Amino acid sequence: MKKLLIATNNKGKVKELQDLLKGLDLELLTPADINLDLDVEEDGTTYDENAAKKAIAFAQASGLISLADDSGLEVDAFDGAPGLYSARYHPKPGAKDADRRAYMLENLKDKPRPWTAHFHATIAISAPQNDIQIVDGNCYGEIIPEERGDNGFGYDPIFLFPELNKTMAELGMEEKNRLSHRAKAVMNAIPILKKIFGL
Image (cartoon, rainbow, N blue to C red; front, side, top):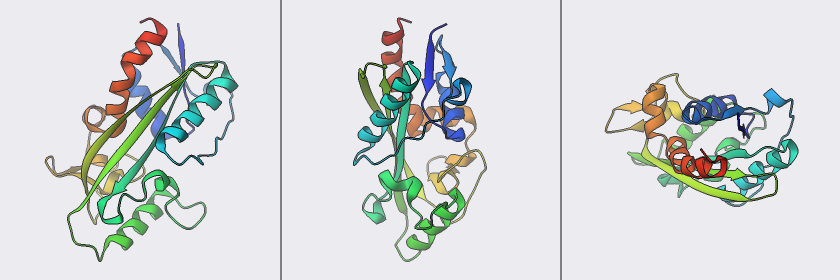
């Protein structure tokens, strides 16, 4: 079976990507599956640069076609921040997801609601010889002041889809895999993967 490496060490992302890609006739591998211990510094100035950097590094280290993503939450009241720096938004080193959510809500509390925002995801697919392709996806909603749901990670519990009155963390996997930024980016990536692997 043809192999695709999911180029991330983030367990939440691995689970989502495995679920989104399960319809393809591919063996989906994680870095842990092949004993690959690789940490790529995300020092690019765009989502594309970070996703490409990760995909290329994992493809070269493993010799496998690799799929990486870079994503962020862009809050309109913060002029699009934290964006690229969503995972490093809290000033304290080693901060957890819950710390970042609390810090965001603290910084939003004096801003007028609704706190409109969108999630952005960029996916990069790289072959070991650096042949790279990039796609992206977005989903729109708003930040709410209380956490709801436990089917997610990162900012999911405070990101509301107003039309559903559900946060990202309240969605079932099937709904999330239709509506999320990562789902939309993967939908755009699937035709590329089919072409690369001849599926």
